[in-house]
Length: 563
Image (tube, rainbow, N blue to C red; front, side, top):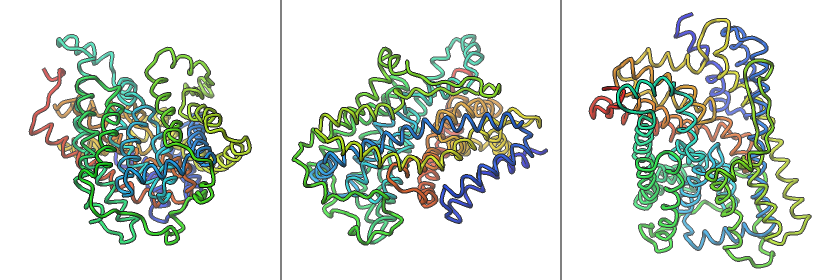
């Protein structure tokens, strides 16, 4: 079978998902079981994957679903706990005191706070934490999901303390073979990896500086009473300032310190600067922007567990510091468990494993205390005592959160298994590469020398399928390396384009959208969200692709392998 036909059949499940979710606006709970069946059909009939392999991949996907649901549960539980303790109403008022302008609130919560959470935790956690917080302070649920998904771009390549680079690229490339070659050339694998890291940081910084502006423009266009682009553009100076406040320290950290801390340090530096500037009115538009009155919102925007703020005002007074302590604790514990070797070892000591599933070489391990879900639940327990809650309030929060988690579970139990079938399809009787690799090969063979323009798209496709920058890098880094080597251009920069593109793909990853939607009680609107988040994804891939062409052919970027 020709490469073109392989790519066509490999893409069929993705095309089918796009038609159902985006074109026909079918809810994910109805669409994803059908897409799963389509994926299985292609795996059996075209790729000739064994029944055991498909079943093992499905089981692996279901086990991963448990981990994702654990994170979702923790995020929703924290929000509901703060709702019942009265903290949310205090936090809401606190943001109004910084600035009542919703555009500025979006930059602070979604962009800067979200970037920090991504740097600490990764794996979709920013949307799971930032989106409910945005709903709590008065954003439409759909707007909150859109913003929560958009932040899963610039900080993602250095999310979870550098995991997409340290694990994704390290495991995705033949580090031993490339390292030996580099040693013979008088260099080293560490030097090569740092070049990739620096190029990822600079490329993200150039592209990502405009993400806060894009957030604001899309917020006013899709959720403003006037449906206006210009109301978003009106905040351009402050939005650029908010972007640079993160991307400058982010890029410098990536260049000089490596892949672990760019997103963390970028947010830690940027957040207080932007909050201080907002309070002082620096670059803030004179005209405050807000959503239309809540009663005018379409039903599709509204959370299934919309908060009644009036009912919360009867709570005993609480300081802003006390209200924010749970979120501060989440951030601190996330960092501590990722940076301290001793603490990390302790929380990872509890593990549930399933090795060599059905003899297919597939493995699964869940560390419930290390996952953000475990940390969030731990913070909920602390909050119960800190905010002097009644047991019935905590019980109500657990009940509300469980219902939402079950709703999300039905969708994810089909979505994640089909992803694992796609990724694991490389073991087959047909002799084909896995379905994602087949699609990537087709793109590479079709475009020739201008491939750097498309390299981010390939990385984005990997993340769209896998829902993870790390997995996309593991799956496609060696492929991108091989294309660059064949074209005689910098392999390091090509892998950097892969890593940046994979970060952008997180904005349209279906199971990330489902997870984020679940945390705000907005299931069945996944297609609408995807129609919006595809815009920043296209922007990101296009700009990064142009940077790729300029870097390869006009700047003539090199690396130690090109000696």
